[in-house]
Amino acid sequence: MSTKTLPPEVQRVEELAHTHVADCYQCGKCSAGCPMAEQMDVIPSTILRMVQMGDVVDAAKTTAVWQCLACLTCSARCPKSVQVAEVMDALKQIAFEKKIVNKKIKRTVVFQKTFIDTVRRNGRLNEIELTGFFKFNGFLSDFSIPKLLADTQFAIPMILRNKLHFKPGSPVKDKAVVRRIFAKCLKEEKSE
Ligand code: SF4
Ligand code: SF4
Image (cartoon, rainbow, N blue to C red):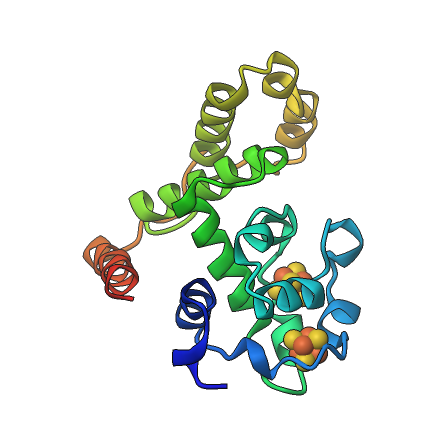
């Protein structure tokens, strides 16, 4: 099917995901190989079907798109070369832009945003910074004291096993490269 004949929201998914959702013939191989399918509210092949049918908003509202690990197993297994993982990513972006992120998954969104901000600042992951900012931003998102304190019992055993690295790893030599990568991604995103 020509992209021009598709509803605009489906076109947007295809542009972001660089794939043709109409190529999906619902064989289910993507869902069968997905390590998260059992936890998802809607399995990947059904997400594809929803997008094909123009039901992009409901697909973007699922928790599944945020539970996706971006492991690419689905894309690799697809006999029609549909970029399923990229469709999941595109739906995440649409959910974020339209402010229709599923409320059940609020903390996952906070985690992903905090993770990417940490990498943007440092050029690599800083575990302590990620943990601190995630706890702080997560608390601001729901003011949940139990969630704020959750996992704290693991801190001492982790320190004793040398699994909590307080010292950040060796700094990235050229942080300007990291800045350029982020700037390029954001520029491409705006131009799409
Ligand atoms: S594996 Fe490909 S063709 Fe099969 S259901 Fe998934 S997206 Fe569709
Ligand atoms: S990329 Fe996401 S949807 Fe695809 S197999 Fe991995 S977890 Fe499942």
